Image (cartoon, rainbow, N blue to C red; front, side, top):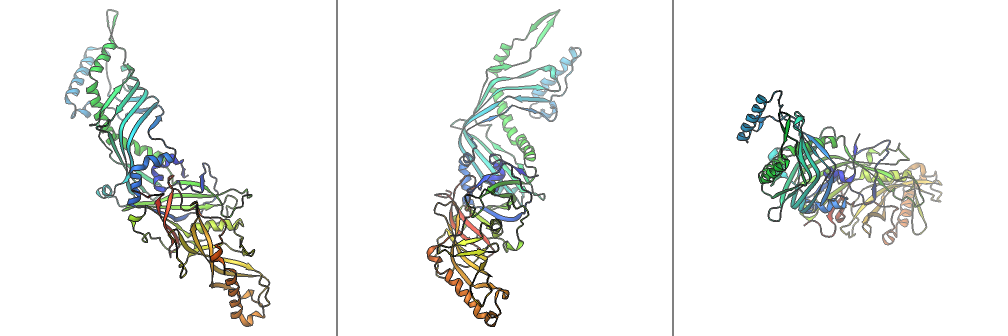
Length: 571
């Protein structure tokens, strides 16, 4: 089963899958889809080096758009148990004097105390409900192609989250540790403890690189790499309300003498700088080595199955009084790689909950891969290509609902469609000047006509191409199709619609039909009549609005959009 994940939890994969494409869609938390007809590579995204700069210094803002608050957070209570017992010889090389003293004390106790024995230690740490407050001076996401090359990675991508924190305070109700193999030793820890790291002179810096790739099973592999940090250089301060220590007593002839815990606390306070130095070293080493292992384990649990985002999509041309449910639009991460730009391929599907048997037609797809070569990469932030198979699938489902059964014109005439209109590439008509936010496409239509001619049957069906301009709406909420002309050279009329009289002059009869089509479309360029509905393009990506730098339909049948982050683009 695929993982359907809320937006905030899909940060890592969906910074990549760009799953928050919700300009005209609402996330469906529990979609019910009987059949999924997958369209491979129907959406491709290219994030240029210029585009990645946006994430370099504005990741915090992006996460804020998704409802994720970074400057403070809360964690439920947790328990961590060391996987293996700790043996003195494991730390002999780094702490020889300490191990020597430990072995001497352990030996004396075993020798002089009858029944005393001590196993190798296996600590368990329990941290109560916790929270943090941080003052971030930097929170960015960057690509690292150099690290990819040094590690010999040929596919996938290496990204890194880079943090710089002026000051971070971690606080918890309690931190308690005990030895699961020697429980008689009791528990030690703190109540109401806080740890403060970083200052203005030396802020806390952490770099978390991770490698992601799609595997042969269609799921996402995640590997956290060694984490860079400056814990060994930044300031660290510890505060606590109460020190928790076991109760120790010595009994002499029935009289007990208890260890003075107040003195222990004084000793701890005196040794606090040395202890914090060890804590600093251990935190740094933990962040470099153990933390990536923990992240990788969590990722394995979290990323089971293909990553999928399912949204509602309003059916194009749907009347306000139409109560039928919206289409279901699904996105699945198919592939990604980092080669100068971050390239992401998405499998998509669009289904109608009330028409589950409808299947897309293979011949309605593109004829090859898209190209983003029309604009130099340094001049745009994101490239987005949409295969005509996806657009035609939406048109198919809308037509099957009879939303596109008629194209009404301002003069009162109607073009009655008897088959799904199909979108495809067409050259820009001669002499037409286009804005960067406009392109031309053609719609192959089959129209039912009552000609009222003795040379034709009472009802005929004519196939032809409508040349339409795809233009952004004034409010930038999507794109609409404007009728421009009819390509009469593309007209097809089956002989079965020509009467016996007309078959004597088939060439002239067809010319007459072409003339009629020219008359019907004569004023389209002036009136700019639009087809019902629209396309929700460009989408918002991770809550970021996008401006069209340039749009075009390529000869292979892809709608290609060169996009800038709204207003100014990346800096």
